[in-house]
Length: 235
Image (cartoon, rainbow, N blue to C red; front, top):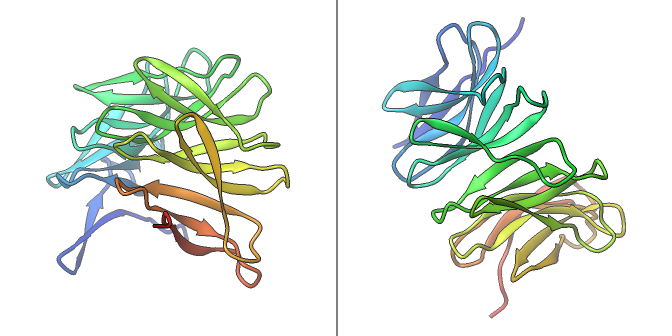
């Protein structure tokens, strides 16, 4: 039997079912802001994945880019701006979007690439994610002032993704390095810095960063595939 999974909100010691779009059987919550607005995706009656906003007991369909069929929301800021991805009729590929004022805007792709996905947005409206480049690999990007900028990779790497950004514009994510493994990174002042991993580990990834520069994510160890970690600046 197929299990039907629903997005939930946990507060005051209780788990609340956030529901699905009409006719849908599965939903997923990706992010929440301090106003209690939750975003994610839900299946609908035709089993299409749709970006949604869960708010005040309602599941609001955010739609897709023009002509698209699938979408999903990954991040939301305090102003209620939502980012994620949607299929695009122009290319048939996933394109990053910004949803605000009731409309979904296509953020485009990096030069030579054909796909993109937005993962997070800060209060300044800076958006980060991952997009393909001319080589066919995926690179971390920053979108601001109407322009998508390639953040590159760690030295010797070919693939990267930006997963989080704080109000200071510091960006975190993961990138392959010269050893061929994925390493967590911090990007600031135009430079991508390798955050390393736990002793004996070979891979790591950074998921989010707060206003104090504290970074959370995961790292491999010699004895376990993944452990949750926090990177803090030395004082």
